[in-house]
Length: 208
Image 1 (cartoon, rainbow, N blue to C red):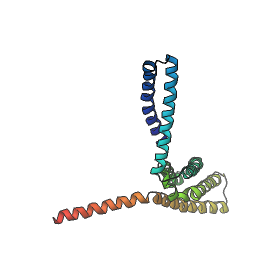
Image 2 (cartoon, helix red, strand yellow):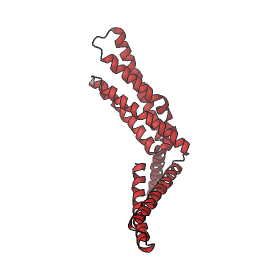
Image 3 (cartoon, rainbow, N blue to C red):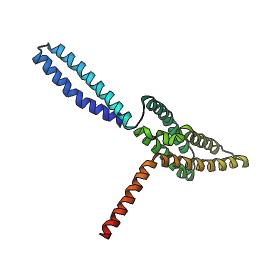
Image 4 (cartoon, helix red, strand yellow):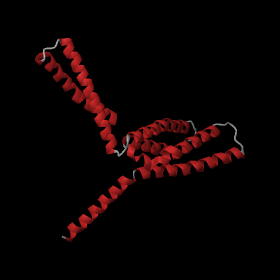
């Protein structure tokens, strides 16, 4: 979303600058058509680049991040995206509707964490355990369960492993849900404050 907005703003500013430069160059400075066109394109390109740089650093400032931090977070986001796809793929390869239904929330929460962090990178460190540990465990367990459950013949030992894997997945799902809560904790605190304030104000209005 941020990249799209930057592109739109850059074009919105660069195009009028390009047109203005061409008219000034062609009519006021009396450059040839081609020289005026070339100059206007160069100025538009520089303007677009400047707008992009300013927007990028403003984005970093709003998220209270350094360029190094942002690159580090982008790297972790890039690594997490295919893991979430693997998680979904493994889940839908399991031919047990009850299992899929019970674990769909795991995929939804993982996506929510990824989208929230991508939109607001400053939240990354609040949910760092998701990126450093929990998503890997979820993928590993789900793929393991998918492999074992696909076997045509299952003995008691395999059934026991499947049962243990289901329990482990429930535990990791609870941890990932807590990761999402941690990421959104500031919003929840702000919402609670606004609710408490509204109640307090309503009480004052009632007594008046």
